[in-house]
Amino acid sequence: MNKMKIIQLKPIKPTIMKHWNRTCIIILILCSMLSVPAWSQGKPAEPVTPNASTEARALLAYFYTLSGKYFLSGQHNYPNTGERNSQFAGDYIGKTPVVWSQDFGFAEDGDTDSYLARPDIMKEAIRQHKQGHIVTLCWHAVPPTAEEPITFRPLPGYDTAALASVQGQLLDQQFEDVLTPGTELHKQWLKQVDVIASFLKQLQEANVPVLWRPYHEMNGDWFWWGGRYEGNYTTVALYKQLFDRMVKHHKLNNLIWLWSVDRPSQPGREFERYYPGNDYLDMLSLDVYGNDFNQSYYDGLMELSAGKPLVLGEVGNPPAPEILDTQPNWTYWVVWAGMVRGTSPEDYEKITGDPRYVFYEDQAYLDGTAGYRKACGFDPIEIDRSANFTGEWLMSECESKVQSFGPMSTPYKLNILQRENELKVISTSVVEWGDDAISEQTFPLDGTDLESTTFMNARRIQNAYWSREKDTLTIDSKVTFNFGERPMERISKEVWTLKKRGKKLEILRSAPGFMGRGGGTSIIVYNKL
Image (cartoon, rainbow, N blue to C red; front, side):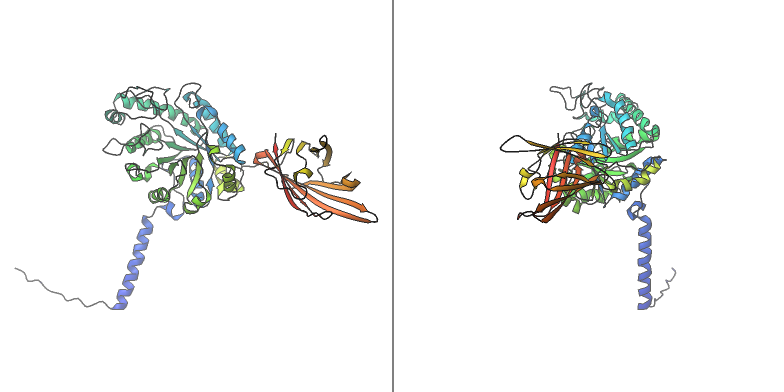
């Protein structure tokens, strides 16, 4: 037996230990930095699609600039309706949503969800992209147990072994077959997916990047693809199978992949059970209805995201500014079709007045997308902000705030004809004891004097001139009253601006007091008839 030699170690000096601790800390920090993904250090990640298109990379990079800073507006449109709901939202809100959302449909001809609208949807998606909108698509997928068209919900007395609706559940063996190559249901699934891929290829050939949100609300059990997390045949496995088919087989490189979930409102819907991993998604999407913007939902997605962008794929109402205060990293929201009026005009005014919320006309969007547009081969978006006041306008007394004599001193109706160099205004005022009083004026729009007479035969000189962008018209007025040998001048100003995408005329009138009555500033609002 060998004898063991015992070596006695000398204690380390405190100064050496201090330097050693500092060195260890530095090494640990460097190692942790090496293990942190690039996107969590403020750098945009590459799309998970190999060899992603230039346009897709540029679009994803743009979304990384939004987190914590800007929140894009969006609106969903039913398949058979083109952009009708987006147009309605723009008129109702007064600003145009940035994101145009659509679905591939599933229903019969004539239905708003008709799958036969797909060719028109592709044309509209290309048009929206060229105009400067961002395109997002989802798919209420038909179950492999059926052929198109189908219904949204199961019909009464349906055959549970032959599901023919978007909502409902496949049998366990059927779901397993969908995920098993060689089975009839797998072949049917491939056929259905290949049809959708063919349409997405049309957009790829047109250089249109797509925010692609398949199998949405996958942690819920109301759609045939959702709610499965136990064993090998899961919703996550189905999502990955779709990813592989579209990316590896069809070589689609224009898709930004959105992993889409609903709120984890009950056991079995926890996000983690359905997370496919960062290699299968570019952005994380949550659907929220009933204003249920629970902070824990946001925090849970932030923990999973590793810095990847968060979106609200579907909402009934956009989150209020106070929600955004504590959940700042949402990058866009989409109001579902038919739900625009679920948010009041007053609440929309709060949203449009907050610079964090971004609409198509906002300078933040025009400036922010300049690089993305360049990557797409387009010039930056240009908005024609010039005003055209032509039309018949009716005063809204409830929206107006009129000083001095109130509404009785203000025309209740304006008929306006705007030409290149002049503005013809026919004003109609109420006379309580007789017929309406009608007056007509034609303003030169180059600032030259317009002379007329007004109350008490006073001489009036008016000058109308445009702002630099021709979006605002200012009318200066000087009225001279002669009281004996002592003339008195009264100077006032009107500033005309169009609101609500040209549907509302707002006149800001400032004037001094007159004959003992106080002056001040009036806001006169007219709605276009």
